[in-house]
Image 1 (cartoon, helix red, strand yellow):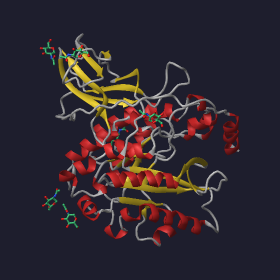
Image 2 (cartoon, rainbow, N blue to C red):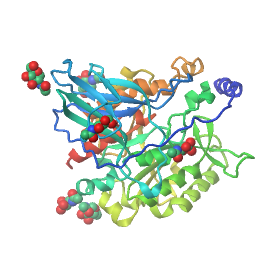
Image 3 (spheres, helix red, strand yellow):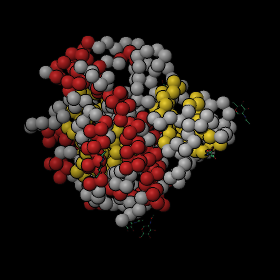
Image 4 (cartoon, rainbow, N blue to C red):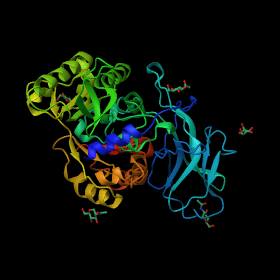
Length: 435
Ligand SMILES: *[C@@H]1O[C@H](CO)[C@@H](O)[C@H](O)[C@H]1NC(C)=O
Ligand SMILES: *[C@@H]1O[C@H](CO)[C@@H](O)[C@H](O)[C@H]1NC(C)=O
Ligand SMILES: *[C@@H]1O[C@H](CO)[C@@H](O)[C@H](O)[C@H]1NC(C)=O
Ligand SMILES: *[C@@H]1O[C@H](CO)[C@@H](O)[C@H](O)[C@H]1NC(C)=O
Ligand SMILES: *[C@@H]1O[C@H](CO)[C@@H](O)[C@H](O)[C@H]1NC(C)=O
Ligand SMILES: *[C@@H]1O[C@H](CO)[C@@H](O)[C@H](O)[C@H]1NC(C)=O
């Protein structure tokens, strides 16, 4: 019944028009490290998950975030400024300037364009925008938006002895249901289907290392592919092969370690034909990514140095037990800490009870997003997953930075550029010590 109603909504929704034009802005400038000594104000930029059909309020608006304001934060001369150049070189004429308030957050009307990263120009240089906390004309702290294509390998002297289990790892929930916002295709169906704005390649370049994948078996006259990414039972037009190819380009062009979690199999994976279809998926995996698969014999406790030395940099979790047992390179699916709640407080209380209880048994992902109820989705009481991500993403950054950084393993979010989990993970791993 529910499936029927949503399918109806999908049919009713018309798709027309052209994608919004966008420009890429990129500037190479020397790297901008933010040393956190625990006292300086923290500033960081995020990209809003909110999107609107109205012409002047688009999507991908830059957000200013700050924490630990100075005691004089209410002073006239305390400012959070946005720049299109490095304020350490020239801090005059900010694009946006706001007084720090308790909320620690301001959504600007400046759009951050889609980035078209290419494999031969991967870099963690600042991407056009900087934020600074300025007081009495002095820059107390600054930061910028940037990709993190090599963060693991760059930290090898610190994390070489760590296993994936010892790290904090940024991930995405429903990694494969990605699509850029399209004002002309902003249907209720899409509002509850799409969880990410960036494709898998971009996710990896920005620093995501955990991919949560749900697969359906589905034949169509439009494509020879039979294995597709799905969200619940709604099949997308993104094939599993397309996702694997994006992962392969990333592994080919970096020395990073990636976790692919085939977490759920829906439509077409039940009954007599299931075993054969799983075999089709495993064969595809071996063809596309076979050289990178970490053998199960390494165990989940293999240290990163071993993975680098052997070039085995793809950890695959697989939710079907009988298929997994027949393979020498499929690990158990990653354990999900999933609260299945639609309110921020309920999510916090669930994660507070679970995140720090799981350490060092198996790879575990805190699912740090809200989940709509079916009725709520049909009647659109939440305004869509973009709105739900907006409610929780800012909080998620603070929870995992201030409360659970000592024990979090994987943290998976929706519309991940709306939180700062990638930077929080990188900084946390530098401070962690092996027990
Ligand atoms: C980036 O890719 C998008 C989507 O293909 C395209 O619309 C845009 O023009 C590209 N930007 C640049 C600067 O090439
Ligand atoms: C805060 O205000 C006090 C008193 O006005 C002043 O002495 C101090 O230098 C100020 N601190 C900063 C960081 O501006
Ligand atoms: C700083 O930037 C402003 C605005 O772009 C410019 O007018 C000014 O000349 C720059 N100052 C220096 C010292 O480069
Ligand atoms: C790993 O541990 C070994 C033995 O305790 C130590 O000698 C080595 O320096 C460590 N390496 C890294 C990268 O931390
Ligand atoms: C990593 O694991 C290997 C194999 O267990 C071990 O020999 C090595 O000392 C560990 N540490 C490093 C930094 O390689
Ligand atoms: C989190 O858990 C601790 C005890 O483990 C408790 O004291 C605290 O109140 C909890 N916080 C929230 C927000 O649930």
